[in-house]
Each structure stands twice: as structure tokens, then as C-alpha cells.
Length: 193
Image (cartoon, rainbow, N blue to C red; front, side, top):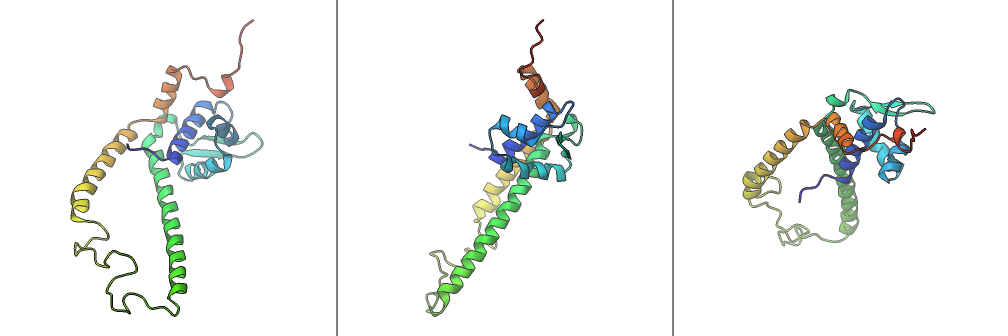
């Protein structure tokens, strides 16, 4: 089953929370994390990225927090998914670079005084996979993967993003209203006389 990452779901929920609850005051991240049941530091990184990308606006001060940077109808679910996806891709690339550096240091330490497979004439790299990728000219993919599976997946993702671009934060706020979810400032209010 296809799943959105936890970070993406939290970002979507946070933006809807801000849109739904930021009247008249901004929504503080501690309020969002309390409602979502997550650590504040986990959400703060995503919120700051949404501020940098122009989805949210940070408000400083003792009653500060977050507001939408644009109207609810001008922010789409697809935009938030793309922002968090790019953030996660950058995190993955950074993690891969760190891992490669660790492996290079480790290989450098173990190579001191030891011979590798190429020097001993085995003709293979350090793993069980031959150094060649089978002559298909692609970096680590088979013709089936490159010409059949990836195009299918890319088309599916494009279709999914098109659908997510059609859903606005306004749509989600209206959905919350139809489900009788009250904004935070109204929860606990009693208007009986």
C-alpha cells in the first residue's frame, strides 16, 4: 500500500490546524503538538520550512505562533506534499553522503596493509555484485525497471499529485466543519444561560 510519510501527514495536519484555529490569534506550535500528540521539536523543523516556502507566516512575541501566509483556498495539499518531499529528499541525500563518508573512512582503515579483490586478481568489487551493471548504461537499474516500472510509477505519481493539487486547505477546513470539529478556541465554550 502506498503511504505518505509521517512527516508529510504531520505537516498537512499542522497547516490545516493553523488554518482552522488561527482566528483571531496565531496558533502556537505547542498547541499544535499537543493536539497532534507529538514532540514540539519534531514539528518545528517542518513548520520553519513551510514558513521559508511561503505557506505559513511566523509571528513573533509572547502571543506569537503561525498563521497562513496566503488564503486557505490558495494553498493546496499537493504544494505541502512537494515541500515536505523535497525536505525529506535533502535529508536522505545528506544521510547517504554521511554514510558514504563513514564507509570510505572504514574502507580506508581496513585497506591499510590489506589487499583488495582487484589487486589479488579476483576481478570483483568488495561485494558479491560484479562492478558492471550488465552493460545497460544506467546507474543501477535494469531495462525492465528503467523502461517499464519507473515510467508506470512516474505516471502514477503525476496523477496523484494532480489530484492533490486540486484539494485546497479550504476544502479540508470545510470537511472539518461538516464533521462538526470545532476550532480550538470554541472547544469547551458553554453558551448556556
